[in-house]
Image (cartoon, rainbow, N blue to C red):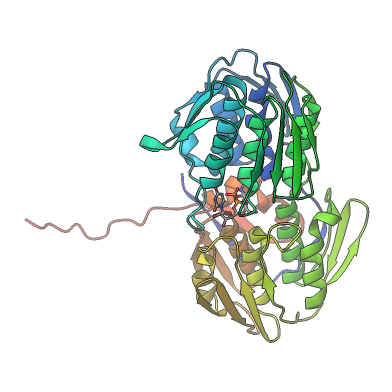
Length: 431
Ligand code: UD1
């Protein structure tokens, strides 16, 4: 049944909260288990819808899945013997393209229904196709299937003309079992790219240079199972940091890698929030109206596009005018129409949003258009005076593990309630 969030805003968030495992690492690490026929124990797996879908796909391919606790999963891939993922579930998320990289690496032949995911722009996969082709695969996307096949994969040099998280990871997945060495130039440096490489190295891969823009992969013949713990989610951490400041709260966010948050931390300090960094936690405090600031999204270590939407909401009540430039995804301003309904003054021209800070937001009925838009609207609801109802929260569940529980533990008044169908009051007869 469809659900919505109902938020009574205006309460400062206070207390301590722990961040879960990184969604964008998990959604690559789970398909990566297919690179070996063995047993894996993966800890700190976020309990989110995208992960549930991926585990279902793995299960449909023949893998055995067993949860040891809510966030620890044992995956046994020994019975998987083919690379055919023409499974409808695969259309439901972007990350299903990682099955291509992993299964091409393992079986040298794979077909996966073309990925779906949030509608935040055109999201082409040309870099994935070019990279896999350079390794020696025949690739095509005919009939809605991302298909890749190779006699053998041979290491090579691949230059990405645009930094892409998905393409960097996907090519790594195939190249770890290629013959010879592969060099990825202008590779993505995001923390979850590094985490996936660390996982692959635990499986016996030889990847060097992750976290820089040149990654070198020495192909090996076989990989094996391992135990691994996924890094904390940079974006959930950022969402909570923004929510703390937006509600004039005082929150200690634990299980976090402070360095991953540098771009956001610097911006929030510029706005006037108080931020203290510890070894694996960050305390965010704010008691006054924040100042306007300009933001441009860039690949890591720049300001993450995934936090642009929540940050826009934070700036909506800051003092002065802020300019936000979205450099990564051209359609990532869909939350703005919704926060306008809550009183925000924002104009958008192509990839640029100008936010004129208002004194306050007011509660309204709004709709999430994608995952991070949903997170942004939750923050708007927490800040706003009155009641906010957020529809389409299925997007939020794709990437946050019951975020409302964490917010409630910090003092928020937020509840998840079923959406009742509007009753038909008039039975029109058009005969
Ligand atoms: C991943 C994340 C997403 C995040 C994004 C940027 C996952 C499942 N999703 O998405 O949450 O917002 O990184 O940090 O990890 N591009 C091309 N051709 C390609 C691939 C990408 O032109 O073949 C372009 C995209 O349109 C975009 C830019 O490159 O403008 C970056 O995209 P990319 O880093 O690939 O994003 P995703 O992997 O889709």
